Length: 229
Image (cartoon, rainbow, N blue to C red):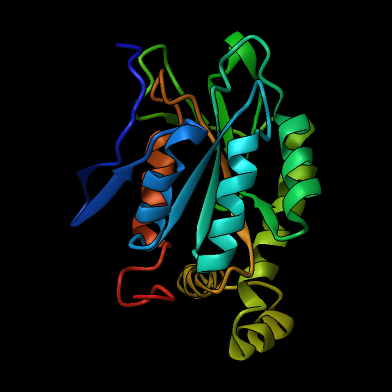
């Protein structure tokens, strides 16, 4: 009646040549048992954080079990289009609670009602969305954000290189990694819980969801790569 989930529900999405299986879990703490049952069988957890409220009690509870089960995890800051959305405060809360392993992949150009651009530091692209959301166009990164985005990109590359000795040597020698090497290092890192990527979106307006699906498809461990796979 209240249109809230009370059971975990399986569904799937076809993305490129892959079939991605998804299990939607209840958001209320009263149904934590459904969440725990799901955590035991998934390969990657996606923790959605409300950009208006930040870290909540349920987030803390689920995090403890993610650590216990050693599950690769992505954080997604959702509802970036809402009036009280605050990306900086939410990211700071994530870092304060979950440590330096928090690795932001994206930043907004604007939030609240103006949220229609996402700068992706992994791909070094600024995605511009129209009112219908969906597939964005690519435009120049705002000059005021270029230094910040470059620092974020460097942190992502370093996080990828740290998970493989050969990649680390290559990174020191060449100062960068190829797209293939970067993807390999990121897959290793997220599998080993060396870092936890942070994405942003407005699910309601379909802004940013495609990029998250792409990261799941390209980077997140497949069943045979997952720690408990």
